[in-house]
Length: 622
Image (cartoon, rainbow, N blue to C red; front, top):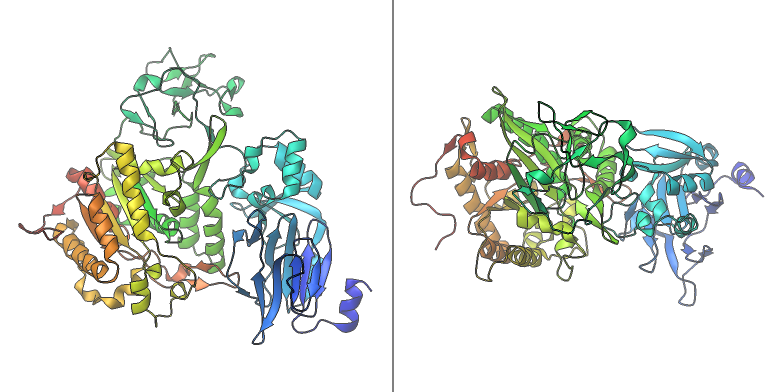
């Protein structure tokens, strides 16, 4: 009896689940639960026994609900739900199309809905590339043709996925790269294994940049690459050809215009290429990446954001840009402009989603996509390493259009600062040594002292189990990394300002009378007195509930300020997939731009009208 006959004659039991495996095209109806999917590719029903094969995932009922649970999958097996690693049990919701990958198996499934109508819309013979930015399908392929196309063509991996006809959403190219059959296809096609690097910090896909280490002498000078933090001089700057006859670069590949060192210049100072064309675009000599506008004319200030995994750094950064642009313009007469739209695309996409009327589901999807896009894959010698993507903005006066500086923001995975992660394996964490200001985002929902005091708060982040607090350890490791990179002695403190951001203050503000906090911007003045007052309030709360954060921070830097911040201004919503996402309609950031304004006022005080703090006050009692 085929599947349609089963549906037509008997209908579906209340808790049945219909799955479609996209690669094989096999449909499965699970009427009796529990049901287990084994790593052998087979299903079994009833209680799982020790002698049964290892299971990748299974369904069972609990208190009248249907649950999806992860099995004992070995670490080298991919298991992704909605493109993400998952461990928490998922309560299935009717009407939701779930996407699940286990190695070579790509499942879509639904529970307790009009499954026949849904299944009839799906066609496993029609595969498409899917562009997340444009939200549209591309050319049609068979699955084998699609894999060959992915392996042989230069695609924008961070923006692309694959889907079949009738499917909602897509599996990302990074997921396809983790499929054993795809890796085998790459070997057969002599495609380098780096292109499907399963490193969780890797952006996947084609290499973005390549460090040119062919020179015999290391470069040095007053200029700093925003892509790899290596130094170079004005004479080392490369120029980018404009003539298509100069397509192809020995380091970046055939799809990029040639980079060259020019000996001829026109009257405006632009380089002249081999065909007599004036070339205004310049490139970093280390990575050969295009340098942002104003790189040679304006000072460059680096702001590094560090925090534990899951602390909300990416959300913070995307919302920060929007808040900074508004505050700088309305309060201080300055414009924060996009210096490199292509490089800043991940933040701009997230910002547009959150402030452009997007839904909660769209916000969750954008966050998932953004995680991989926060990194560049840079080939260095024989290795491919992940470097955090620089997000570069130009600050200028709004009336005179006088440029003030280029601001470079970095968001780093917290795992890069865990003890035992060598800097040679994770060089992307080294930007903290070159930073002009450091921001450490503290997640109070993992701190035991805060969780105990907020145990009756309804925020779902406080209910998550198994979240390990090691933020004081990351601060200690941050200190070690900076001391090593700068050659400082054990007792020396860094001269860079360090901002400790106690995030998600919409959750913990009830622990302090909110009216005690003062507005740091008063009459278009940045009030040092208000900054100091607020800092002492946050510091006192941390001393009470998480004293090691204060101890570690104040052992790192001479100048430490503490800030209350909230990117969302409200608790996120837990979706059926298990992920958390903000409601774009309710986003109301609280003081999120203040730490950056404080750091900027340290670097270019002439640009800010600052109300000084009262004489005799100090941040740290002593």
